Image (cartoon, rainbow, N blue to C red; front, top):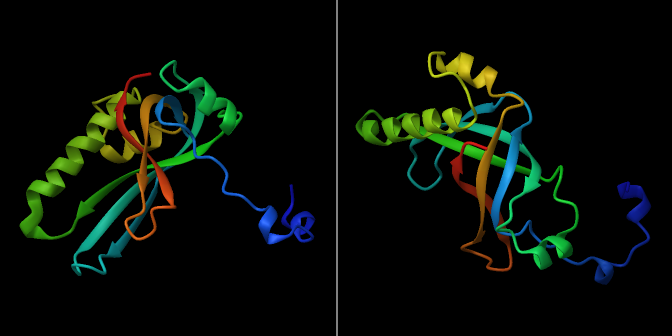
Length: 155
């Protein structure tokens, strides 16, 4: 559907679509991860962020079949997995935890542990892993529910 085709619809016709149901899914890394830097508006700390763009391959057996039917075809659904690295020298432990989590994630994707991080990021493209999808309500607006990938494992 194109946006221009929807211009005649009334606003009351537009309903919130269902979120991808909670549970485990096979995910595939779609492209080379996005990397950016930002400053926290709350603390002023500087961060670097690596975001993996993902596409859903299939749902596992633990995903509710009624919820899946309400959602529709999950194949091709998009999501992200993000790792944040603090640039604050006093937060070395936080940086090290993020590095370990990234290493573990890349391992779950089948990336060779003997590669450098940059080589591992490049090799991750097209790789698959098992990821648990969770729902998290927005703190400021509980009607908005985010889908997040938490725990990962080898597919």
